[in-house]
Image (cartoon, rainbow, N blue to C red; front, side, top):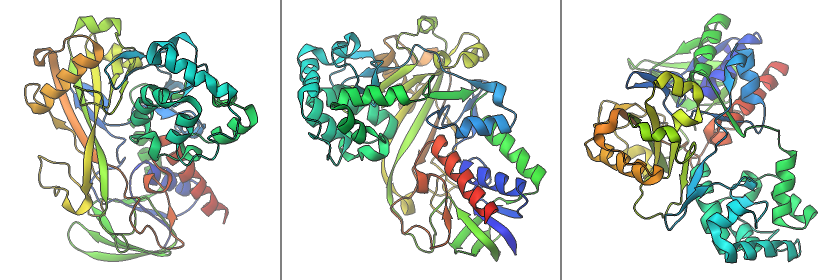
Length: 456
């Protein structure tokens, strides 16, 4: 019998377990794999210690920043280079992302940086938004429909699609505007136009960068959370799989095959209940990191990176981050080399069909269906390396050959199983499966869950 059992050792589970134990609760955390941190882990490429996945956090709330301060990392918070990112349209044109937009929706349709992307005819169509009655599009069921009705097809396709695809890995026609742009619909009705609604929301947003990072990498959050859990006495059980999750108990099985029933006053889980869920088809992401020696990249030809229209011809990557431009601390550590991170969409894969952990050539998985991604080295001359250097060349406008690559690695993972049956009533859901991707939301919801338990 314990106070709380936390299922899952990703950031959500670590944050909740740490806060609960700090508040005096007796906590057991079970993790099916042998590692903590989920996708917030590090790997080494060409001697550089790099974030394996997320390298920043959104500042739409102060949850991650406040946690970093509590963990002693307040002085390590840093903002990205202000040069910003670029985008590539369907037909391969490249331009800086307009400065006054929201998810690509322009706040000033006739601004020079918008004209550079969509052209004068499309900008004039978007400007007509100011003449339309405010109810037009206000009841749209998707972000794509809202933009299409207010500003036209060209603005949607050239601006909104590549940015939304890069941020949410989904076409705007499949996204609820109230979820991805809270307050936009109400602002449209209040301000009378979509452009003015965008400007109003931007004016109300917290001043400064939309994202921040940590010197040394986001993974430092995990390092400090694990250290705090040890200090506060959290019992961590690795290689321990939850086979059934109930309101006051978790059935677990260890790597050795032994089974046990952990009884608790409260249960928090970042994965669906294996006893209730069925394998779901989920799309994934592959991140290929290249460390290259190419002095021509010193000029940051595409700023901090580029978001790519999903139908852009001749480019397989959906985005590239020029990490040594985005983060000055990393440029210093790289000593003249450049770190490029290319993101690729991975086709839908059923959880039941993914490769077992013993197959080192594929992505290991946990028995509860969540990926435990592994960083695998890449030969710059093989199919993966050739594809990455070809795409980097197309996106950055600088020839990059396999001979320029001094180190490369790839990481592949799938998203949370949000289509499964979920959790039993009374089990508190945390993590991606409950709140969606993004450290800001995950940290905030996990801390709220822990606070409610401590206050109960």
